[in-house]
Length: 204
Ligand code: UP5
Ligand code: MG
Image (cartoon, rainbow, N blue to C red; front, top):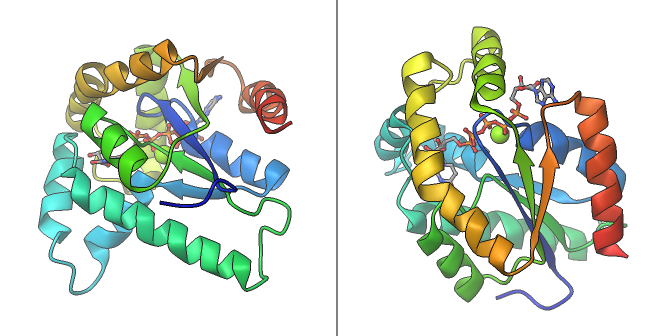
């Protein structure tokens, strides 16, 4: 587990809600290290010599959740690498030890494993909008993203997994009073202003 100087914020919300977009903005504002579990899995899928390539590909296409050991390990390694780099003096000088963990945990057992092995999250940023909005955004992005899951069949499965597996995680953190919910139906800039204000408050 990491020391108490490390701040972890989980970033959740349905597929296409705007997690990655808003995280990129928060990196500029606060010097967070942004780790997207989905991006780490896609990189591992294409890494030469990975024994998980096929498994990850199947899960992503089917919108199901990759076995948590794989994802938690990728996150742990990425966090260690980022902290080592910070200690060496490069990068994130102002945001030392601040992490945005994007698209994770998606299932209760992942949340438990992460909090046991890595550390506790200070807060959960929850980007909420309607399924219609998310579908439209994903189909638009799918024209150019090259993502294997930006098609109607995969998107429906992702919505299902989100509802069944991930909503309970959000409800769990809501009971703990850790969730900051932000309506992400409005423009990127407006969502960013609200998010920035919430994070300023959180870090103060
Ligand atoms: N856009 C964003 N905000 C907008 C706004 N306010 N107004 C108008 N347009 C807006 O945004 C999506 C699109 O919408 C973009 O084109 C953007 O410009 C536009 P983005 O910021 O990319 O949304 P995001 O919420 O990040 O959507 P993403 O598709 O990445 O979410 P998912 O949660 O579906 O994808 P993720 O990469 O996290 O996971 C993919 C798969 O990996 C999962 O389905 C699962 O199979 C696997 N996975 C695991 O198994 N375990 C994990 O822990 C994590 C992932
Ligand atoms: Mg994303």
